[in-house]
Image (tube, rainbow over all chains, first blue to last red; front, side, top):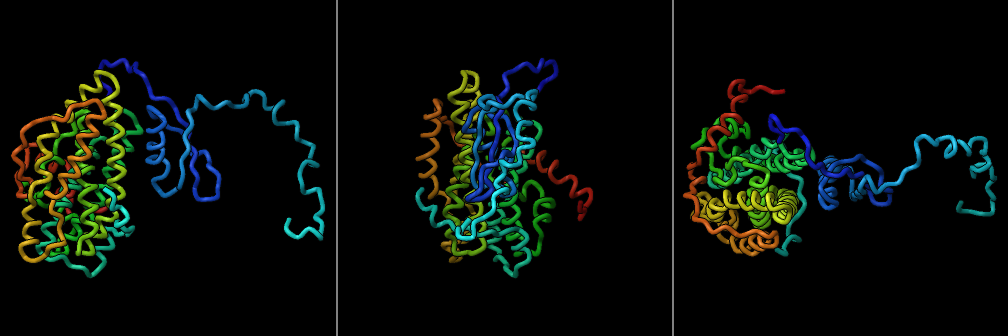
Length: 102
Length: 274
């Protein structure tokens, strides 16, 4: 609890990113983030915050500082190259009738 | 500890009990009332943490635990009320302090976070053993309520165990406060495992197999909780028991003000819905 005169300066818990798998066979999907003192409590906090309405059957947590991301300022170099290269989509190929289970 | 396979999943709710034609006998109702009051009083105490916990995430964790307990209270009080044609709200909001049958541990003020964790550790261990046994009750409604509650209180025990370890093995300061929390709650442990007059009445009138004799749960508590405390680098308190008497309406000075806050709205606006 904060008290009057408290400067508010204190150690805060690290940030964790939470991934929830909604049912067997599906992938874990990013659900949000939370604070927790360690990974064990992060899983429990995730259970309380993100699975209260039966959203999941499995939880992953990752310390946010352990995630390496692409550079938001480098969208051009990173993501615009595929434009105009629709041939990369498999839809350009016709299905062979002799291959039954594609 | 290894009988969890006996606990069946049954989604019983206060509403399904109220809508059913099941009617508790007076003796069963008095027993359910005590259990319901335990859950209700502790649920209210945990609700007091919301916006006050050390971190937002713990507001939610303690709030969730409180809501689980409120669910148990609603089912138990609804079932008790079937004997006397009273609703869960009648029983929760329109009885006075001396009519509450909760054991005194649950009304203890929250204290600091460590003291609440100490109360949760003791409470959750007690509830785990109680509901494990009660899920085998010959009374089908009590058994179903207990089976649902068992899984929830098992999680509550995990929560308090995790925090006991972290506070006990954390800093010198957190260790000191965790030890102080245990010291505050320990005198109230004995009452939890002392005879329940309502349960005894059930046995006396041939209802054996319905209520749980809480004395029989003490060995499981003694096998677990002192070990957890020592593993967290703390000392098991050796203190005389408080006088007890919650099951016959004797309470500490803490319950009255708590009930005043809990009941004021329902009494000012009887029957109000929102």
